[in-house]
Amino acid sequence: MSSPEPEMPPQPERSDPETSKLDRTAILSMLQQINANAVGLQIEVEQTLDSTSDHMARLRAKGRKPDVVVANEQTAGRGRRGRHWLSPPGAGLYLSFGRAFNRPIGQLGAISLIAGLATAEALEASCEVVTGLKWPNDVQVDGRKLAGCLVDIEGSPNAPTATIGIGINIDFRGQPGPDQPWTDLASSVSSIPDRNRLAALLISHLHQGLSDFEQQGFGGLQEQWGRRDVLYGQEIVAMGADAKPLRGRATGLNESGHLLLEQNGQIRALSSGEVSLLRRV
Image 1 (cartoon, one colour):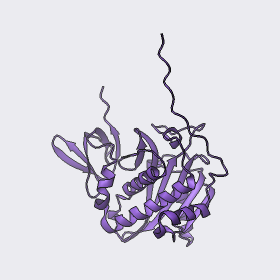
Image 2: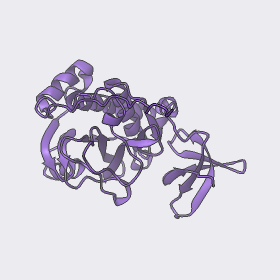
Image 3: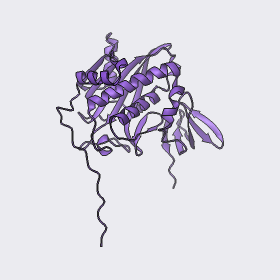
């Protein structure tokens, strides 16, 4: 007698295109309810852009300084190391957040960590998803990438401005996916959150997280990040700046946001690089 087929988890219904349409007024209204301190932010919502971060940079060059740009679609979304970020219309949340800092540019290396933490917190607040953070900038669910962050920094060394681009995969059913292990909210939750509310939550958490970072540095947010650290205690391979693979055990992050790698009893701090779990054969 054959075993019964396992039951598949119920798939969430697709959102109605009209009710899920990105709307600036709706985002501002929800933001006022969530975090009144962030209400004064200047927010722009566009239907189609090449890249929310590139659009923000162009506006800044013309003297306009929106704090947030959101798009329903990106035709040239950017990921780390020149990768293309897939951004089909209505399938995700594509948002850039700009902020000027009083810290020297050399102290801003942890911004992508703050952005990842804010994204994880916003997702957890919007639906029943359990997230993990993979250094330096990936938000994961069950080991698969759900969201990513890309930071551009410009301006003077002592008064830099950061543009933080964030992409969240919401409903990629029927769409080609990235060329890496990935997931979307439609595969992870029973009810897809409203994109306007998710945008408001993300803006709120980014605003608060970056304010905390400005005052305390990464050390003040180190514990919250560490609770979601998917690499902690794992054997990993890290590609350093010299492109040479480094193998060891991840032991968390230091107060600067550097990844701590244990090799033969010695601890090495990595400020940047690509990391993957060590696969045993």
